[in-house]
Amino acid sequence: MGSVDEQDEDEEMGDRPLAPRPRFSIVIPAFNEQDYLAGCLRSLAAQDFTGGVEVIVVDNNSSDQTAAVARSFGAVVVHERRPGVCSARQRGTSIARGEIIVSTDADTVFDRGWLSNIDQAFERHPGCVAVGGPCRFTAGRPWWAVVYPRLLFGAVAAVHRLTGHVVYVTATNVAFRREAWPGYDTQLTQGGDELDLLRRLQRRGPVVFDRHNPTFTSPRRLQRGLAYNLVVTFLVYYLLAYAINRVARRPVLGTAPAFRHGRRSAPLAPWAGRLVLASAMLVAGLVLLRGGIYLAALIW
Image (cartoon, rainbow, N blue to C red):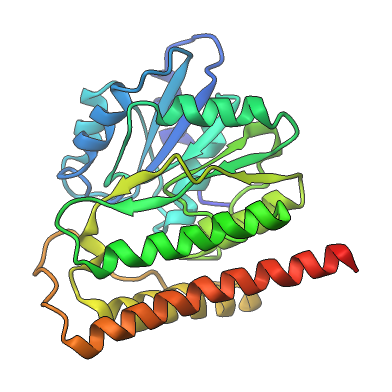
């Protein structure tokens, strides 16, 4: 469990107005997000969902005006001193009052009907514990960043359609019932709020995937280029770190460097374009393979 400063918690909770339990609590971890957070909160304020919504921003040791921006939009602001996205999501979810917890990110925006679509998905599937959806990148992305998520989430949707099993969720677009929440493993870094959360949720009940309800996140994490994202971000800080930290039960490999401002991606050479297509097809193929194995196990 993430570290909790009891005095800070008493002060923060004391400022929260007493109100009926909301339908949704949206938990947003934030580290130096003053440049993006306003867009995220403005997009949430424009949702057409008419039920109760609570927005919680978890300030994870920001040195900028992240907390002030959050408060200016009426969000609940809590502080988590232990660095890491799993600790931040754990902190925010632990104080959430909503029936359904929605996980997303500070650099993400949404279609106006995003929350309504999530609500309807839970209504259509009353026995499910969670609903996931795809993520796309906003304007300014390189072309390969259009191909990759479409192949990845297309494969996730295909596996779900064939087997009823969800093999991946993105932490920027997943909602789960508060009563089914298994907690986040705060010994994990990247992958802990996606792969590990999904694994734990599926022990509690079915998870569904709505491929028609995407979120739109900034392409800033792509600014170091294709090779960096494939090797450093994905292979090292995501897959390898998740596996090692889970086995070791402690954060042996830490969190990937945060991207806030920096140079844009350089244009891809022709060979690099072929590489990203091959890589995206490989990942999508692995997702489909996992779904096929799951389907074969069901038949057997």
